Length: 240
View 1: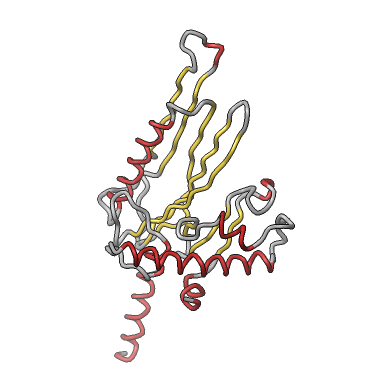
View 2 (view 1 turned 180 degrees about the horizontal axis):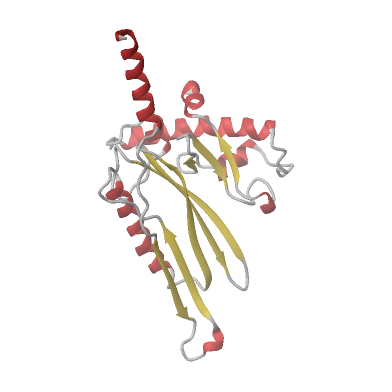
């Protein structure tokens, strides 16, 4: 019987890791701001600005810092609504939620009589090394920068190193094009480096691996949507 105890202990440890506690999601931060373009002329229409951001249990590890980030976003949203005619809608999806990381993919859609646009924003938070008001950048996710590193020269160097590597890796995926995306025929690696910023342009999937992205219409027609490239942390670290 004794020889089975170590095995049971290992299985318990694995089971505990597999069922790590996610952050509890509370009622979203949500509001819709409607401002008349001309209060004296109702026919002039309105500015309509709505946002929806995640709101998590602030008593859980990292929860208060995540909420602080989105409370800052609300202040910016309400300020921006005063200057943008038409409609702006902000929504989100939680892409990763475990005991180490919380990740969100935000979708911003703006429209007016003249034009419309959309933008996707990945936001990753370290729960164990949370910093109020800040997301987790790629070098910190990879461990090439400490969470409390303040040396700007080192920050820039590690960011440039990670960016160069990921541009190469994403370009290889574009070149292989296993998903048969209709990329612009004259799209080049140099152009990729000017529109793709790996240190920020990523979110985490439900396994905790980064998913890098290119905004719609930048490397392929807008109909192709958001272009995503899932690359495991193991593969990235192997190349560093």
